[in-house]
Image (cartoon, rainbow, N blue to C red; front, side):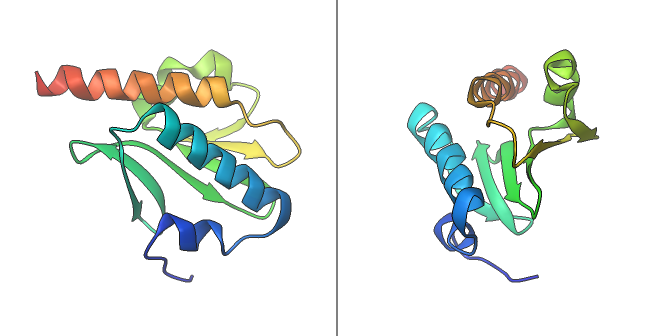
Length: 119
């Protein structure tokens, strides 16, 4: 597995529709949540608040993986039930529209959870 130093280099390693969708996810995150710190963690794009994970995403051959913490996945389980899931992960098939509103809701939930824990 290739190692990436930046989210740009990670996204630029993909082509076509997958690259476009990864770029769109990134744009939604950074434009709506400017306080999140962007980095590469576990080899994929990561967004953190106060060093706490909020969301990660990754590109694969047939899907995009979203990793928004097991607590968020449990909270949004009904909205996520149409997707293949693991503990804290969800697979969005490349043939599907990206659920930007749901991603934003999950991010907001994790931000609120993180802030509540630090109070």
